[in-house]
Length: 399
Ligand SMILES: Cc1cc2nc3c(=O)[nH]c(=O)nc-3n(C[C@H](O)[C@H](O)[C@H](O)COP(=O)(O)OP(=O)(O)OC[C@H]3O[C@@H](n4cnc5c(N)ncnc54)[C@H](O)[C@@H]3O)c2cc1C
Image (cartoon, rainbow, N blue to C red):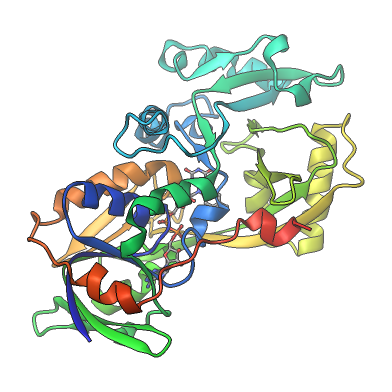
């Protein structure tokens, strides 16, 4: 079967789904193909924090990352209120604020910076009576700040983004380099797509790859000297807590990155999970599962000596962040996309930056070509639709 489409997106994570919404709103006949399940990559493993960049300012300096992300919470808030570029009013907000806490010693170092005019709209020192419940203990010695950042239920976000355009979101088998066919000028002519015993040759006015680490297949095929991907590995920890004390916070350590970042998620069976990222997940990359769980227990016991983790159930998993290659090997400061002929490749580098990436991609996509109704009518009759990913906390810890 030979099919042509207007704009074809590969990858059903936050980047592809946000872009699909924006393109269809503008009248493009965009379609999306996913090799696995919607949100199954980095998106559903993310902590759901809509960063305003504060975690990059912990050394007392406003970095480029912090500046690039400053507008994101306001943009998302509008969407969550149903007045923004995409209606996300049905997405559950896990916490309207993310918090930052520091020991007394570090508060002295950070206090002036956090109170500075540049940050006054983004950080607020809290009175003790407004601390999250978990810090209401006489053993807690430190300060808590509220950040202008939201924490979202990411599986609900993925479902809401897919809902309006479910008829043009399809499942395909893993793509190989030799499924991509270039013409004599090096332009991407068509892609052979398979799903079980079905096969089609898909051409498009423009192809967009927002496939996370799956972008590697098109990078290899195009073989452009300026385009390469890096992976930054993480070893994340989940704790099924025996107590009901939700926490959404970064703990400030001595370095540039949070010592630990905690978010709370709810499982299918009603149980709550503390999901632990930050430095713990970076320094844990070389550790075995047992070593990483031991490190997490030690860290939690030292930060929350008044809580009992002896009966908590722990699990870990490994995941790579997929991003454009940086000379330094460090993390990129903002979203990235690059176009070669009729192919655009992009990484948001943060869930929060998906709207920015979508706007960047739309600025390089050619004007609407006309309609190509074949995809929903012809393909949709026979081709399977992509399922949703199971939340990682249900996969690892749900009874
Ligand atoms: C542990 C962790 C925590 C994070 N926490 C946060 C956070 O709190 N806040 C924040 O802003 N950011 C966070 N991030 C970063 C954020 O999750 C990612 O930047 C973002 O989700 C990337 O989205 P994406 O759509 O580009 O990629 P992905 O979510 O990885 O999606 C790519 C999709 O493409 C599919 N695919 C692969 N190959 C192909 C192909 N050839 N054709 C079609 N489909 C294909 C995959 O199956 C996958 O579904 C976190 C990242 C990690 C790893």
